[in-house]
Amino acid sequence: MVVRRVGSRGSSRGLAGSLPRSSRPKRANGSRERGHGQHAHRIFPDIDTMKNELRESMAKPPYDVCNFYKKSGLCQKIARHPKFELVTNVVVSINALWIAVDTDKNRASTLLDADLIFQIL
Image (tube, rainbow, N blue to C red):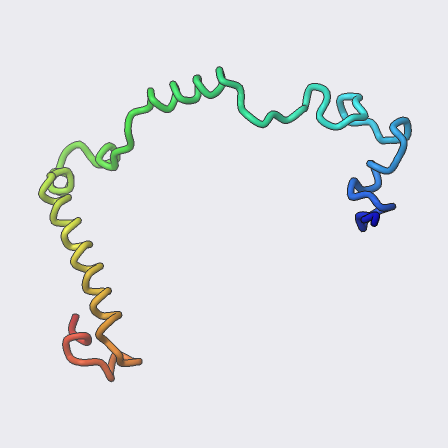
């Protein structure tokens, strides 16, 4: 039994694949074939390029939002303090826990129908 592919003239290559080589349109580099010439795509990048990109990324200083703060003043002093960072992370964590409790325990469809604890917090 012979199985044929459905497509343009029995081929899945399209119109350019069904034309004789001499009548195929030329590419920008003068080549009629796919994958030949200056603009051929590679599967893996060049090893030297990868090494240079890695060196450049390692030479950059690590991102720190404190680099954008002013150098003097009370607010920047508070924002740079490690305890402020700790308190901020604790508040965010407690908020995430409360959202979980509210989602699981609050069965009311509107705020007015909810229990008082869910209305206040």
